[in-house]
Image (cartoon, rainbow, N blue to C red; front, side):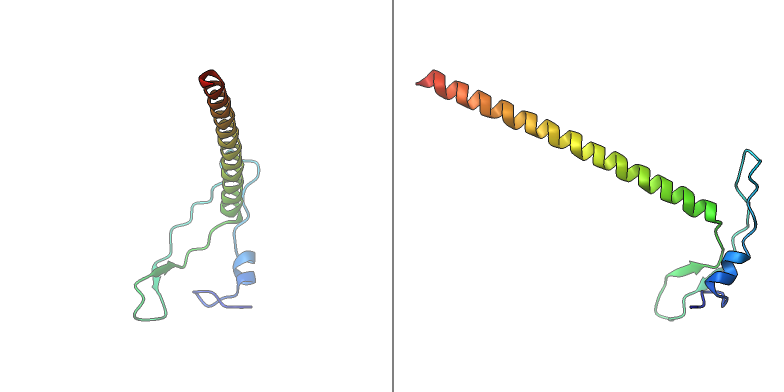
Length: 102
């Protein structure tokens, strides 16, 4: 296993997470953020946080991303249908105007 920022393995972090309450209205677990840890390379300004997030956070992010993908796909389909309608209408207008000029 590859050790993470604080030196423990990913499986150790997973099993050390607190169990989330299932029977409460709020499933959030308040955890104060750990202090920021400097990146290993001195020339990199990026800082990484050593706090551990609960699986519920990842599940929520997954559902939000899935919903965004569905909405985006729906928007693209509707946009394509509108463009097809406009191009069909344009073709009909061009053919009608062309027939009237003759």
